[in-house]
Image (cartoon, rainbow, N blue to C red; front, side, top):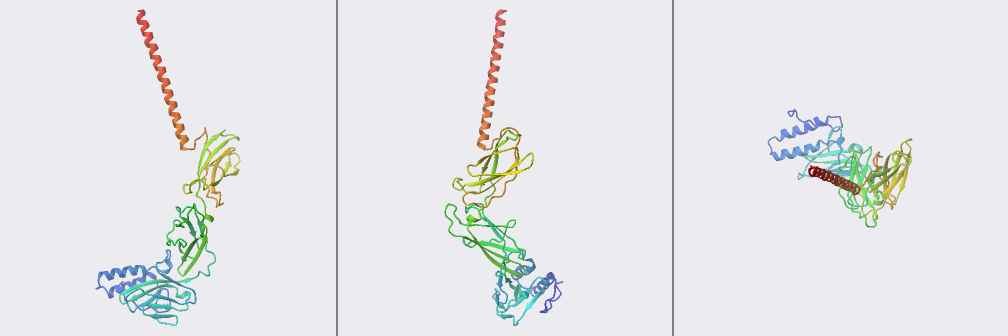
Length: 387
C-alpha cells in the first residue's frame, strides 16, 4: 500500500475516503524520508495523529482554532521555523490543496482567507519539505445569530466551598466549555453527566455586591458561538435535599395517628442554622385513599403530621432569600410498631436504659438465687440437729 505514489488532488471538491487520504500523505512522506532520524519520525507521527481528527469528529473543544464572521478576512499563521510552507484544507469529505487565488492569499507562513464563506470552513494544515508542521481549525462565528443559549446554573449554597453547577445543551453545537470570568477562572471543558462544576469566590457571610459572569463557548464541525450569562449567586441558590428521620409514630394504624418528623439541613448548607434558616415542606400520602397533602413550616426542625400516613417526603428552600426549592427526598415509608427514636443521642440513651434494666434484673435474680441457697442450708442444718 505504501508503494503507491501520492497523486495531485484537483481543487474541485470530490468525496474521498478520509482514511485512504490520510494514509496517502503518511506513506508519501515516510518513503521520501525513510533515512532520516528517529526524532523527525516521532514528530511526524504525533502531528499526523492530530491531523486525522476530521471536522466531523469535533466532540471535544479543539486546542487550536480561529474564528471569523461571514464576509470577513481571517489570517492563519503556521507555527514553524520554515520560511516557506504549503497549505491544505480538509473537511468531513476530502482534502484540498490551497493555492494563490482572489479569496486566499499566501505570504510566507501566513494564509489569509478573504470574504469568508461556508465552503472555506475546515481544518487547515501547513506543510514543509519535512512534512506536516502545524494545524488550525477555521470556524464560522455565529455568536450574533444565536438566540437561545440554554445555559442553566444552580448553587447548593452561598458558600464558596461548593461549586456552581451549570448545564448547557444545544442541537446545533457538539462541544462546550465554560468559565467564571468574574473570578478569572479557568476554562472547564470536561463535564460530569452533562454538568459543569465552576469554582467561585463568593463569601456567604457578606453582602454580595458584584454579579457573577459565566462565559460559554461552543463549537461544531463548522461553527463557533460565544455567550455570557450574568447573575447574583443568591438568585440561583437551590439547596441539596435535606436529611429526614421519623422520630415517633403514635396511635399507629388509626386515623388519629401522629408522626413526629425531624428535618436536618444538607451537609453542604452553611452553618449555623440560625443564621442560614431553611423553610421546609412535607408531602405525605394518606393510606386508605392515596390522597396527597402538603404542609410547610419555618420554626424549628421538627413537625407533627396527623393522619393515617403511608409515606412522606420533604424538600427545603432558603427562608430569607426565597430560593428555589430543593429536589424532593426519596419517599420514606412510615414504619409500623412501637415508638421509634430518630437521633443517635436518643438511641444511645435507650440502649443505656436497656443495659441498666438488664443489670437490675440480673441483680434481682442473683439475690433470689442467694436467698434460695440460704434457706436450703438452714433446712439442712435443722435436719442435722434434730437427728
